[in-house]
Length: 356
Ligand code: ATP
Image (cartoon, rainbow, N blue to C red; front, side, top):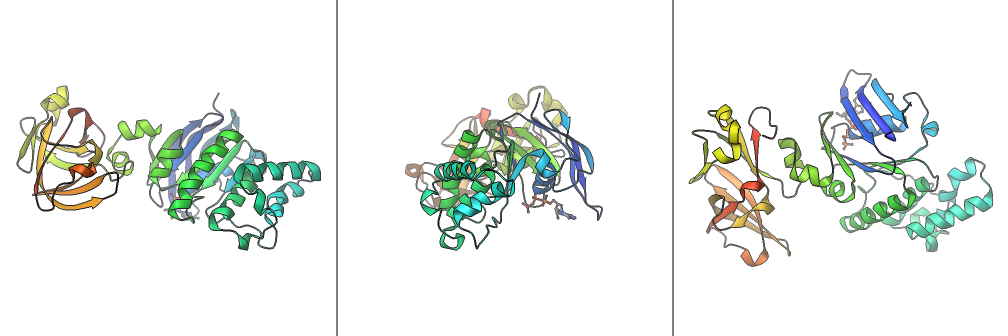
């Protein structure tokens, strides 16, 4: 049986706004699930319904198969870390960590043992006597995470916990949170709008848009088998290139190239004749030179990233981004010939935007 079940969960706010539509998901015990999507897509609302901080308007939320819609946050045994990690400013790190346990009337010795252990896991042992104002942003965030994991809960919920940190701290905390998750074994649901966080941390990713789940899958599944154009464009950096064309005689024209899609489309070729399809390929799937599907364009801009180069190419009516190796970096304003292996091309229905 799944540890958490969300069955047709909906949220309609009192002003009538329908923020979450028929959210369905199961999470196994110990899984790390990431909700990802653009601002306003309903990630936090869903998380807050799981936490018990927001009523579920319609649908069922189950913990270990038992209906939990009306349980309080405490009864659900959840701990939550928010974006704004409000620590108690007048308390030391030690007291910030211990406070929740003291409220529960837990024995001082047990509290001390747990504070020391949590501090060890998070590298805060040397800072236990400090006040929050004497800590860096990353250290404060660790205290906030510590306050949650010290409680030994079954469900750990995090809402953009790294968004107040700088880029370097985010990378460090990312791996720390994954490690803490492994050590505690708590089922974790983590909200972010950052696809890199989702890809690097998740066992499974839930991609959301406009209150609807677009796809649920492992990082590999959503990257290699996106369900639709939205997921394909959201996961991956730089994003997938999309070229919209009408299919004529099983072919499309891109710049000076005629691309024969009959083999790729197979039996669907006839059904899409005269219809719009979208030709998609990832910047990193491109090879310079001719290949399965060969395109040509003019180099508008190059961005040297050290380990790779982003090349912005103009193909008359279309633009594309290619990712190449530093030694392959083409000259600005030169013509570039590049190709995409047939297996790395994605085709989408031009009207439904679903993958073909
Ligand atoms: P962000 O990444 O910006 O936090 P999100 O995906 O977490 O976005 P939510 O905070 O869940 O999005 O909000 C989803 C939608 O519900 C938004 O359009 C938001 O404006 C709306 N919303 C949130 N809270 C309320 C409320 N109390 N009343 C009405 N609408 C709300």
